Length: 613
Ligand SMILES: Nc1ncnc2c1ncn2[C@@H]1O[C@H](COP(=O)(O)OP(=O)(O)OP(=O)(O)O)[C@@H](O)[C@H]1O
Image (cartoon, rainbow, N blue to C red; front, side, top):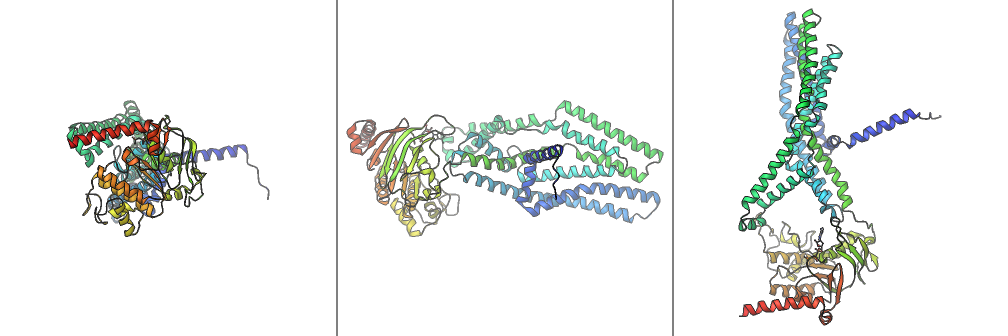
C-alpha cells in the first residue's frame, strides 16, 4: 500500500491544530479541570455529571410548563405535564445541596493534593537555593492562596462557585438549544449577545494577583500575622510596645489587598454601556418577533411560554460567577504545578554523581580554589578558598561574622555547589559522589537547628534508632536526664513541654552524636555550644570530642576556649583561608587568630575580675 503524501495545506492545518491544543493545555483553566480527577476521580465524575444534569433541567422545566399550558388550552389531562414539571422542579431543588456537598468534598481533596504537591516540590530538590529565591517565594505565596484565601476564596468554596458558574453556562446553553426550535436566528442572536458579555466585560474580572504590589501586601500581612500569633515574637512585641504597630501593619496590608482587588475587578463604565446596548437589542428583537408570531397565531400559546422562558433563561450564559471564581482557583493550581519545575530547577545540583561514598573520607577532604556566591547576591562569599581537612582530624573554623564559615560547611554538606573550584573527598569531586550516600556519612549541628515538635526519642533519631543508642547519645550530649524519651518537646501537646535554649542545643548535639553512633564519619558543628553556659560548654565539648573520636570534624565557633581543642584551626577572611595551623602555631604567628584570641581572653579576664570583685 502506498502512502499518499500530505499536502502543505494539510500539514499547516495539522500544525495549527497542534498549536491550538498546546495553547489550550497551557491555560490555567485547563490545568485546573485536568487536575480534578487526580484529586478524586469519583467525586470529579459526580461533580461534572451534576453540572450537566442541573444545566439541562431548566430547559426541561420550560418544556414541561409549555406542555402544561397546551394541555390546559386543549382541555387534555394535566397529569402527565404536571408530574413532569413537578419532577423536574423537585430535582432542580434537590440537586443543589447535593452538588454543593460534592463540590466541597472535591475542593477539600484538591486542597490536600495541592498541599502534597507543594510539600513534595519544596523538599524534593537536593539543594536549598530554591527556598531562598525571592521570585520563587513570591510564587509560593501566590500558590498557597488556594488554602489561605487571602486574595480569593479557599479551594473548597471555589470549587462550589465554579460549579455554580458552569451550571449557569449549561443552563444557558440548554435554553439556547430550546430556542432553536422557534427559529434558527434567535439562538444565535440571544446566545451570541450573552456570550459577547464575556468579551465585553473581560477586563472587569481580570486581577493580576502576581504584581509586586499585591505580593508585597500579602508578604507584609503574612509576616505581621505571624508576629502577632507566634509565641517567640510575643516577648519583644510587648517589651518594645510593638503591639499596636503590628495590628496597624497587618490591618493596612489586608486593606490594601482588598483595595487592589476591588480597583481592578469592579465593572468598568464603557464596556458596561456597550453590554447593555447589545443585550437590549438582541432580546428586544427576539421577544418582539415572538410576540408578533404569537399575535398572528404562527406560534401556539404553549410554545410562546416555552420560547419566552428560553429567551430569558439564555441569560445564564452571561459573564458572571465563573469569571470571578475560576481565574484565582485555576491560577493557584497552575502556580503549584509550575512551581514543581521551577523549584526543581533552582534547587538542582549540577553534579549527577553515582559513586557511593562508602566509608569516605579515608584520606581527607580538599577545598580546591573554591569560590561561591549566593544566587540572590553576586558578591563572592568564598573566593579561591584552599583547604585540606585530613580524615579523622578535627578542624576549627574561625572568622568574623559574615566571613563565610557557615557557607563553607553548607558547601561541604552538598547544599550548594561551588561557583568555581571543587570540593574533593579522597580525590573524588563531591559532585561525582552519590549525594544521598555522602549525606549518610555526614551529620551536623547547625546554628539554626530544627526543634521538632516530636517526642524526645524522634528529636534525637528522626529516622529511628534503638533506645539504648538514643540514650547513649543523650548522655554524650550531657542531656541524660532531660526528659522521658516519649515526652513531646512542644508545650502544645498532651504531656508536652518546651526546653530552654541550652537544653535544646544539647538535644541537637545528641542528634548528631546519635548519627555518629550509627555510622556518620563527618561531623559539622556550627556553634554547637553557643547557648550553653561556660561550665556546660567545657563539659559538653569534652564529651563531643570523645564521642567523635576518629571522625572528621569541622567545628565553627566564636569561643576560643572551645576552638583551641581542635587539631587545627583555620581563620577565614576575605573568602579565603587567612591562617591555618594548631593553636600554638597560630598564637606564635601573632596574626589575626592571636588578635581575636587575646581580645576574647582579656574580655573574659575583665568579666572574671568583675565577678570576683
Ligand atoms: N542564603 C543566603 N543568601 C544570600 N546571602 C547569604 C545567605 N546566607 C549567608 N549569606 C551571606 O553570606 C555571607 C557569609 O555568611 P555565613 O553565614 O557563611 O557567615 P558566617 O561566617 O558563618 O557568619 P557568622 O559568624 O555570623 O555565623 C554573609 O555576608 C551573609 O549575608
